Every structure is written in C-alpha cells, then in structure tokens.
Amino acid sequence: MSYPHDRIADNSQYNSNGNRPYHADPAGYPAPANQRRAGNRGGLGADRTALVIHTVADIAAGFLALWILLYMLDANQANVFVDFVHGVANWLAGWSQDIFTMDTESVRVFFNYALPAVIYLAIGHGAAAWVRRL
Image (cartoon, rainbow, N blue to C red):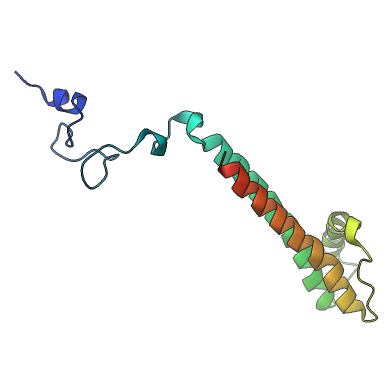
C-alpha cells in the first residue's frame, strides 16, 4: 500500500496533493542544494550585514547631498535643522575639506562635499556586494 507522503520521500516531482513542490524547477527536479537556503548558513546573515553597510553609506551620502542642496538654495544658517545637517556633513567630509579651492564659493562647497559622498557610495556599495558574496 502506498501513502501520499511516500511519494515525497522518493523525490517524485509531485507532492502529496498532486502539485509540484515549491523548490522544484520547471522540469520537476528539486533545486540544487547550493541554491537552497537553510537558516543563516545560506547567507541570510551576510545579506543583512550587506544591507546595513549599504544603508549606512546611503545615509552618509544623503546628508552630504542634502547639505549641498541647502547651501545652493541659500537656506537659513540659523535654522536648527540646517545647522544639524551642516554639522553632520562637516563631520562626514572633514577629511576632504579644502581639497578643491575654487574662487566661487558654491562650486567649492559642491566639490568638497560631493567627493566624499561619491566615495562613501562607492566603498559602501562595493563592500556590501563583497559581503553578499560570502
């Protein structure tokens, strides 16, 4: 006598209710073991770490871009929000201040804050891609 659950045990392409299992490819064969994820060993921890790295890089670049935008639009420097964004941008771009010394102040601010934003994005996204491959 054959029971429906016996068909799953013999690696049949159909499960007990007559449908293909979710992990089968169109031909009906189970997915290879290296494509299935089991717990954290399948890379879920690496994916989460990569997401954190990616997000931190995006936030850093976002603060720098926001400061550039506020400066170009001549935002009120006495405003608490503008002062906060300026302080965070100064801290993030402290290492790159005065790399570019143009005569026009707005062009100087743009390049001195855009350079670290691009570098943070490149390093952050590159590191996240590397961590995902682990």
